[in-house]
Length: 291
Image (cartoon, rainbow, N blue to C red):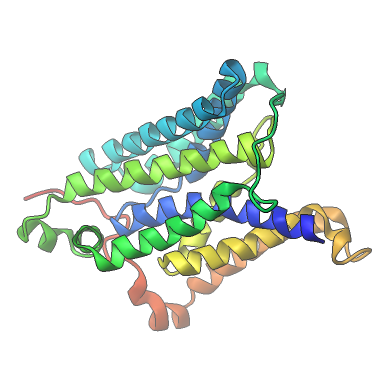
């Protein structure tokens, strides 16, 4: 039972890193539905770099770097060119899906390196994820930088008049968000499941994206949602540990995605929008052009 819980927490930490990165994006008014693609690129190139250099540090750095670059690319399309943010994000995902298949194919198989050490049986990055959730909450709610980020996500025209450089701050958000997503992907490939295969993330980025809406843009609620989905994901892999003989393994494998769909349907209802809709950044997904 203990290994099941620990693996659930390790799955939750990956959802947390990716989800917090997207939360920063959206608080700044930028929607990135290409989160899965950024994670996939970070996972693949981080895996290739680590295996080639036999260095975990290089693998993680490459994952963070490629994530930041893809976040910057999304920023160029969404902020500078005013392209529809959903179209830009989907383009990044499709591009990543094809390119990582081509790049990673020669490296199919296990990482072949000694596993990273744990602290109390769990990855030290789990504790980092907890601290990151606290840190992002503090920055967004207790600092002038956080107020500026929330301002450009709510009323960018008013923020610009107040002396805030909207484009510059939004670029900061998309790059930081991309770096966290790339790191989450590298963490998946180098620690959680160090075996590269075609499209091996299997929707983790889309679940992380849904977590942002599920959390109502609150880092603490996002972390709680990550714990829930980490448990659901591990249950889908090992249902016999808790509920032996109940349903087929293939039915359990769809449970995390079914819950994701149900959550998205729920937050789309008129009741939810009337009661909690005010938490959504008003300018989310809307291009802003300086007058």
